[in-house]
Length: 309
Length: 309
Image (cartoon, rainbow over all chains, first blue to last red; front, side, top):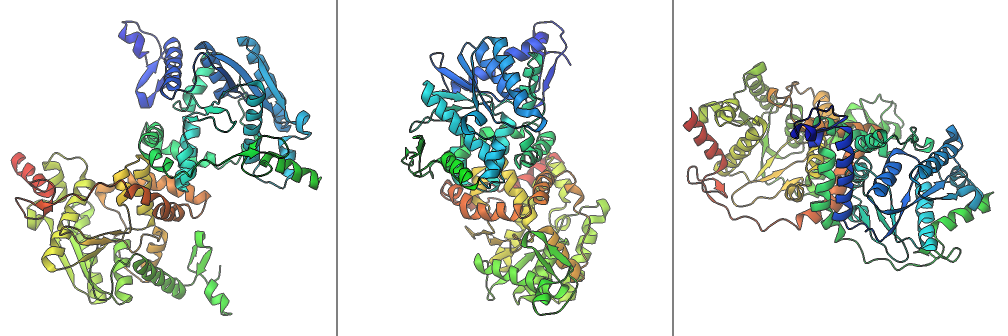
């Protein structure tokens, strides 16, 4: 298949990607420029941030987050990488992830901040979850990462954090929330989570790109990324929802994108109306971070851990 | 596995069915009584009809509709079978379906009314769809069947029509409407479609039973039913949604039932509010049936057919 844009200019260039739901075949050069333009468009449409903002990019070492950092950097945003090193020893996962992030930061000449869980809290994420009697490591991990991101933003004066969530992630989350009719979660799911009560704004500039697109962007740009997913996520239920959507996408190209976009346009406004008044947050009695309870959930988990150990 | 109810009475009887999402193993006798009690409960919960109503049961000759007719008959409702013979010649589908419905009516000693499409309109459903330039035979067929049911109800004084739609049908329809965020359809999807403007009430007493349950009820009661689906429905997209849900159900038993029940409780009320004021219906200029347009869609299709032929 030949590149559609080259073709329109009378040239024949072999396409490196065919984006089925857009019926778009592109060569390397035109794929990269299409991808970056789309990123820019999403940032603008949802007023995620501007060239005046310092943007903290949360990088895990995977294809999505490193591609995001590269795209934002190329688009001329002032980016700062941020990596949470979780202390996962299986497959040497955390050591390798950190190395990859550091290499990438050097390549683009941007600073990378690292938060080392074991150094700061004394435990790895698996030890924390296990010690606190929690089987759902992934959800404990999510809570800790959000907490740490908020803390760093507060301390370093960042007003916005960008994460690499793609369309596969967002549509699977949407399906999971819809299958359970979690009205509250549905009302909050959006490419932008506004800043509130001392929490930084969280944005997802890649929410309309499929995983195929982000991985292709990583590959054509020669990004070295962690090819194995996190060993903790082996049985994540999100994989099931991704599988169901992949099946529908295969038979009806564009299903994922339509599902998510139509949700934002037609479904979400109805759920959003149901959201209760924003909760009043107090300072956590232990760490001072905003929370609804007297002690925030990270401090509670750590306290439980210390009691048990 | 042994029957749970027999076990609670100190007896050991082999179960004929295991209903995974209820963790319920039942012998033939207790499955039948459980199934009929659940049917009665659904009828009561949604105030579908009472013993004073004459209930028109739409029967295709498949497991769902014949099981429904049997269960309603056994529960003591005044039932009348109604079959639309569509003139589908492939696999001798329509001839066999009619025969099966007639046999069943004889077995339970209840009357069966038959509407023969070819005799009344001069064409089979495939000829109608093709002649009118429509490729979606299934949706033309749905329109015609609803029209005919409404017409018969009007002429014979029935206030309620019961159809055999099961949980697999309803949850697949729900997923299809949700994936597209069809707010109007979502607001109307319900086990009861209230009577309005000369249209009979339409009810689905089997909406909480999986296909496995209805087919088991048909089998243990020795119902002879059409085992092949309709030849026109070979590629129905509803099959895709059923497949996606079957996959989720397999990994997370109870998904379909929760998806549909939680929708009725939490999702649907939000969509229902969005429904516009009920449309004012006029009489079709050709046939006199209620319609929003000057001429109803069935008469329009038949007119187009005559123009073309």
